[in-house]
Image (cartoon, rainbow, N blue to C red; front, side, top):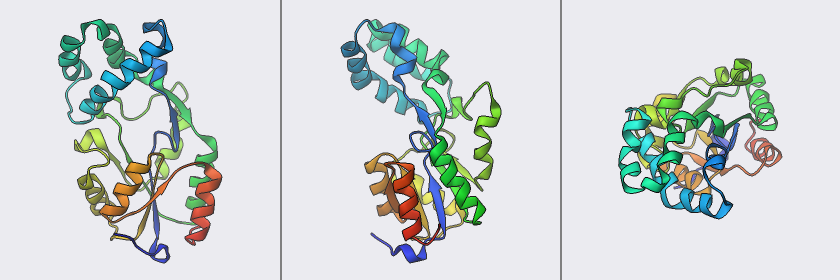
Length: 209
């Protein structure tokens, strides 16, 4: 389904890849001698294990145990997922944080919907002020806490209900096209994040900036 942007009154942000820079490769660099083996691990094991961690409140070690059993040669890397996950979090993306703050200055309601394991939420950083922008959000849906994740239609519907928004009232910003498309199908207006400037242009066209 699609909706006219004239009805948009709020913006829902993904976090990783939009407002927070992250790269899971940073967890595993010391565990693989070549980039090729690392990429094979990511494709073959990591993403499935990562998604499994979103679907439960259990400790990482418990969730990852079956993967360690099935892929014993990757056991050290899987252990690193549990102990070093925060290494993947590189900090805020200043250009997008600036766009968020422009919206807040104009009293546009802002919310967040993120695929993020409950076990590692909120993001940790030596300088906690780096994540002060999270306080701007009126509400945040974290996939691991609700045990749903994008692009499942149920998480978008849950978010709309929690945010008090009707279909067509929210512009949803996600770096993954599939997640943005799924949001559109679920009643939001999906926008794939390509850059802060590209997002700002879309927000201007929607009458929010």
